[in-house]
Length: 395
Image (cartoon, rainbow, N blue to C red; front, side, top):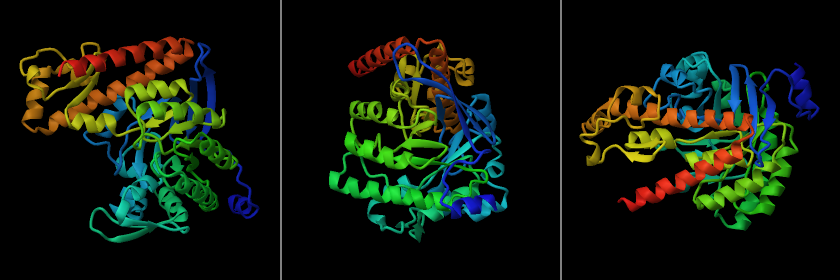
């Protein structure tokens, strides 16, 4: 009743009981890095954090028990995919997404906007929303701000995302301006549809690589008092250097006392660089997708396990890594599994890559807390550049 009265009065303030962000420490070594804690109905999340992506309710290759062993604090689901299969009514009937997938830690759902807008010729955007054809069977569907919120609240995620348009960062400026205005209007519709009972709504700032558009849109989106805010439209076609420069400008535009989420990013170097600019939350399919393709991230650089050079290599993937894969198996065995097409190869590779990303963020949090993040980031960047140059030179 209280929520209904608040909505009728146009009150968009966040009520107590939803996610709450604590800014615990700001780096004193010359960066904008922050150490925080996001308190949710399913437990706290220590930030900066990397969130493994479980698009259809499953992080590919691993189970919830694996994710807990890796200390994954939060995972993602996706509105577009889950509405198509198995459908949010079924998930709701099964007790919500947490119970459906047996995950009792925090969860975030993307609004489906990015997936819909990536369909290109299979969708049509209007002021009301987006009409599109399913990538599964060609069936026609319609996703509006209200429908996206309805689906996400049925799924029951701790954090839900506003429905936005996600044009490429290199899109024509005139189109970007129209898109930003529409995304702002859609946010207000999302807020009206948002029940505030157990899910916290984050707004999304777009604007491509145009600083003036980013500033204007940040002012519009952040004028709506929400539990958190995200930067969208990065890492969708532009060079990494351009993305890093864009985030360096845009992240400080978001409220200091709210979590800042950079969507769909990225590589280990991206994570460290964007933490340096003040970002708290990240997600990306990179570690799991690369694992399935035999590309492993290590303290010594990238390792392509399918290469013949590892056929008789008795060493672990990364001698400095403490994950189950590295503690137990040799590069030789992992290469054999991958060459044989064994499912176990996907699981062991995924365990390693996720451990690398999650452990990296744990190192980042410690460096911030100890006011040495500037040195940490500088050393990490120099090492990453040298390793990549050596890898390319050895081809």
